[in-house]
Image 1 (cartoon, one colour):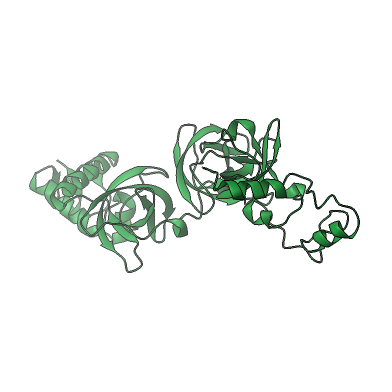
Image 2: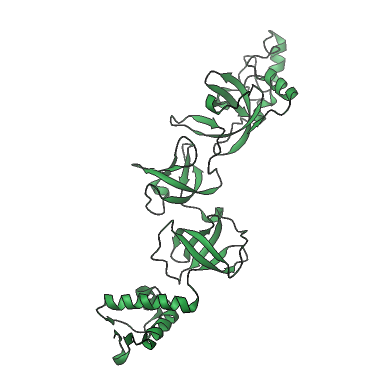
Length: 341
C-alpha cells in the first residue's frame, strides 16, 4: 500500500536520505558533532558504542517501509525506525523493491507497505504483492511441483514456497492442496511445514453442538484421534474410537459438532444419524463377511479391540449392525457363527 502521508514529511525525509546531507558534508567538527549523536563516527561508519540497535526489515511480514534511494532498476527501502537518524543507512539495512513493484509517482521519503523474502539468488527482496501466507499464519496452498528435496507451493509470489520432505506429514503430489504454516529455516529462508499446526489454529469458532461443518484432515494422532481444521482455520478433533482409516491427510470431510470444549476447540463426529449410519455399518460388515468366504471369524461377543481392529466399529455399533442384518435375514447366527445367508 502506497502512503504519501504529507508533503512536509516526505520533503523532510528526502533531505535526510538523499545520501549526502548538506550539513554532513561539511568538514571539521561540524560533521563530527552531527555524526556522534546518531551512532556514526567521523568517517560515517556505524559507531558500535553509540549506535542504536541494528534494525532491518523483517522477513515474512507485511510492514511499512520508507524509500531511501532510487535507482534505474527500482528503489531501496528500509524500516521506518531506521529513518530517525540524519545520515546514510548501512547497506545491509536497505532492501531492493524492483521497478515493476514501485508505485507510480513514489519518491524518496515516501512510505510504502512491503513484504520481504529471498529471491531465487537467495538475496532479500521486497514486494508490494501480498502473499497468501505470512509468518505466524496457516494457509491452504497448492503444490506446483515436486523436486528432489521437497515440494514447491504457490503462495502468490514469483518464487515458489519450499516445503521440505522432512516437514511433510504425508506424501503430496502436484495439484494437491495442503494446509501449512510458514517458518524460517536455519539459513533464514522462508519455508512451509505441514507440522506444528495445532497451536496456530483458532479456537473462536461460531459453531455449537449439532452444527454441520466442513473440515480438512491435517494429522492423525492415533492415541488421541484425528486432527481437523474446520473451515481450514478452527481447531477440531474426531475421537479415536471413530474409524478414519479410509481418509488421508488433506481430505475434506463433512462432520457434526458434538461439543465445544472449554478452551474453544471443537469435538466432531463423522458418524451419521443412527438409522442412516446403521445401514452403512451393515454394508461394511457384509463386505467383511465376503472377504472371509462367507463366515466371520469372530462374533459380537468378541473383545471390543478385536471388533474395532477388524471392522472399524465400536462394539455397540457392530452389534446394532448385526441385529439389522439378522432382522433382514441376510445373515445366520446359528452355531455361534456369523454367516452370510
